[in-house]
Amino acid sequence: MADLKFVKPGAGLTSVPLPNGDTVTADGLAVANTLFVRRRLKDGDLVEAKRPAATKTTTAEKD
Image 1 (cartoon, rainbow, N blue to C red):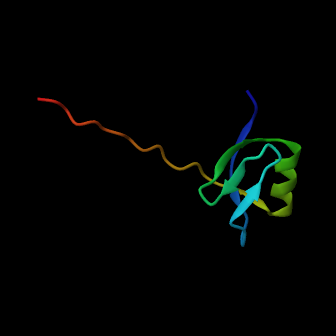
Image 2 (image 1 turned 90 degrees about the vertical axis):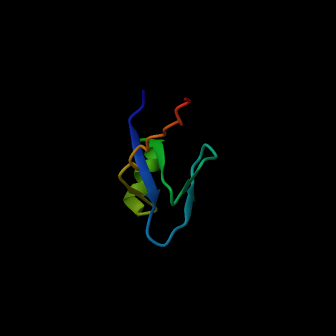
């Protein structure tokens, strides 16, 4: 499995397109640590971010 990084657009940007057609939005996206991503990180177009905490989903119990 490829090394993944969770990234968001840098300051002043609302989205960053990726070569595979995906778009990194303000919500962030886990992406492969490719040369393209490393360049965007170095340029400031993308910034590493913390992954959002997983939310628990509960279902109503039936009586």
